[in-house]
Image (tube, rainbow, N blue to C red):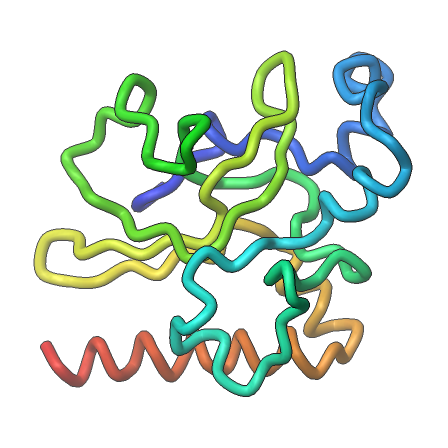
Length: 161
């Protein structure tokens, strides 16, 4: 609700598979594509939240958890991967850290799932998915590392303010 919104993210592909009214919208995706849709793709793999995490060469992370899980809050991207200003009217300039494939409206669409932005006198780091909590609960070392890195990153931003 601070930088990202469900209205841009919609459903994770995994969740859409489970809903009879949504499943036809993703029927054209292969099993492999549906599995990979549980991952985020780092568009800023050098961001501090990824310190100490071995991203895949593509550079994706988290398909087996899945990190992109249930309902997503994200920012809309255009076909070039830039913020889609025809849909995103907020006077903010969020930095997209990672993207994910979501069911947005009638079709799957890549959206900015992990984003950050300066907001008024603060800084928001938005992780976009409850899949992170699922990964922590499962004891996934990389998810725990990213969550701790995100916490430390936010603390460093607060200390600098």
